[in-house]
Length: 165
Image 1 (cartoon, one colour):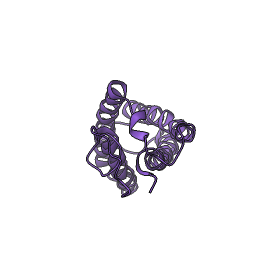
Image 2 (tube, rainbow, N blue to C red):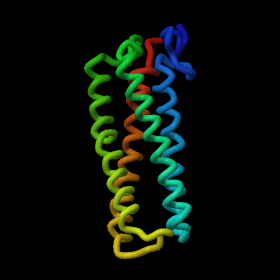
Image 3 (cartoon, one colour):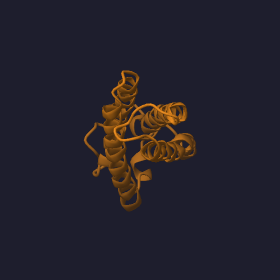
């Protein structure tokens, strides 16, 4: 039996058991993390206006993706896609909870970083009193996004890729 032989009828575009939206979010996280680091580099280079635009665009894209993802999960579920995993439902849920420990607070922190930046930095953005706090909170949000991505990729593998061979 090939590695990806057990694909559900409602599967996504990757050769796994996952749905379209699970595949889309899985791949999107491979783009979000490098974009966040590129955006931080822009700020370090003094390109504050471009940093702001990249962060707002990334946040908007992620917001739309997360809303679409959550709607899909509520309408179609995801647990049926795990049938065929080498992991038990209990183990899969453990990996999900670990992922959610980062996936829930990280966007909330990112919202705080963005809202505070929009309120406290002048237009166009330049360094000021809020810079130190923004940098600290921004790094916390970035680390949260990296951990959200890594735990999400692990969960995706455990739930939708691993198969009995």
